[in-house]
Length: 157
Length: 157
DNA sequence: ACTATAATTAGTAATAGTTACGATATAAGC
DNA sequence: GCTTATATCGTAACTATTACTAATTATAGT
Image (cartoon, rainbow over the protein chains, first blue to last red):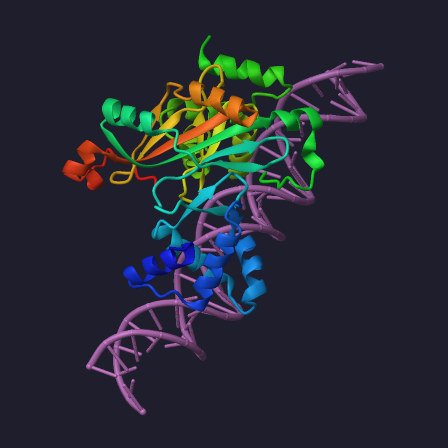
């Protein structure tokens, strides 16, 4: 089953409609799966295919997608909320590498935390339903070359 | 060496002055070490000892403390920045447990991520300087008793 | 100590991201 | 087709944060 179908099913299953606006927004997210788009960025991108769309609708839709656990709303400290598509099963969040030099934000899609979650359960009596793991630092290649001006690198602040 | 002295030294070492205003703010942070106060909360608390202090000064001071790596600016998704005192050596951030039921935010002060940081270095050529690890879920005791109304629990959203 | 210079603060105005709201449009149920 | 609920649009309102100016305090040199 392709991603858009799966999301469509989730909408209808929960009595929400997958309107053209919502579909256009979801499509933007799928097309930019590797980015962590802000509302404003989604708004700009979706205008290409759906020029008439209102900003408030983007806010509402992303909020809804977040409630449905299709995306995760995150804040990386640059003052805007960013949205990250979750995995197919919508289970756990990715881990992130955030480079101080070039600002690049890379995802680690493995789940490295199963052991630690067991430990939290054991030692703290706390059942984990989700987690967030970000590493801040620098790519060794960045450190050497100082890629700050590299256009391939997208600043995240 | 007590905490306030240590922080004082850090200020002077970096050519910043520990003004009475800044000292009062630092004191509030030390007195509420376990909380993750917002700017507004710091502002209210510091007014007890320093009634004349301006809000902008709180913003500036917390920003400065963040630059000096004395506190960490974090965002837990409730729309306000929160500040968390780092450990004495100002090395790494704590891990957090965030309970869906009661909203409590607990700190794990151990560093559980040394192994994973080595793995990031090895597999991604990425040198980690800091990390952030939050677990979201529920305390088993919360689940049973539904402590949502327990006044001891402080909501974080 | 006195003056010049820099750093800091207070108070408030301005900005930016987000949310709320009334009116309109679209879809669903009967 | 008519009624009711749902979603959207555009904008106003709100809130957290930043920017700015004047006033204050500290620092350094003479």
